[in-house]
Image (tube, rainbow, N blue to C red; front, top):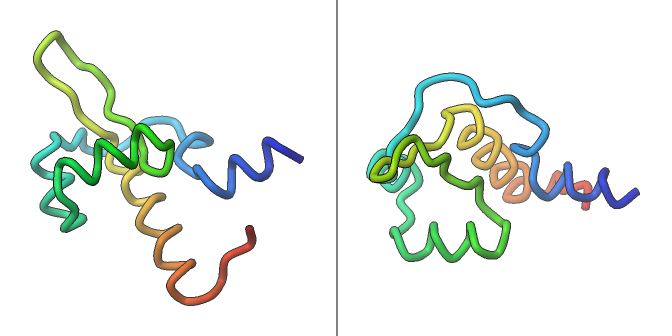
Length: 82
């Protein structure tokens, strides 16, 4: 039951990384959220994490961000299963 709830709350965890790798600035532009908001939500496990590509580069798989946006759209439309 707990894993089902985690899958509903964090749908990106069930997805393999696919699509373009989005750098933090691209994620900011696509979501309209601030850098601070994004990193706080990551810390709270409410936003997909960035993958460390090298010592100075991080990126997020495009399908993880799409899963987050889809989840938020479902909530906005009142289709939340949680």
